[in-house]
View 1 (tube, rainbow, N blue to C red):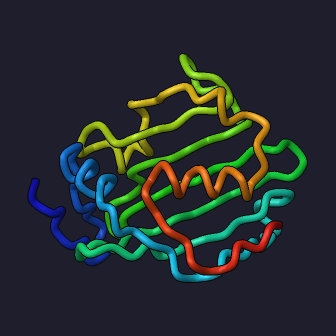
View 2: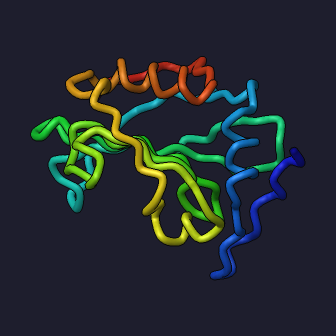
View 3: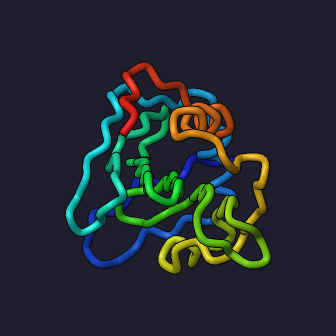
Length: 157
């Protein structure tokens, strides 16, 4: 498979990512996060806290980022991988609202080139095995599933 093209500058036009591009990124063995992960609270998101815009380094010229959100009151956790200038390409929701036909813990993945602009409406897979896990354990499992190594510090919220 050919590597996905580099992201386009944000000009209001989204760079189209298709399923083969997503699979090529997903299957890269050399993805890594080199930075520390620290959560912050934002008044607009209270009580949730977030770790935003975490760069995921790869051997490909793609600006891949990770957002993590955690609501300590409900236990909901979200891991959202996106390509800058394109949109989300993968999202893992754990202990959050149900997404029918899947339950409260589920994974969204890119299916078509329109999925990023529509916030990944298709490709929802139930993941009840992840329910009840803590944010650090989920981060480690997420990295393992996505073949991402993390060399920084993970500071729990």
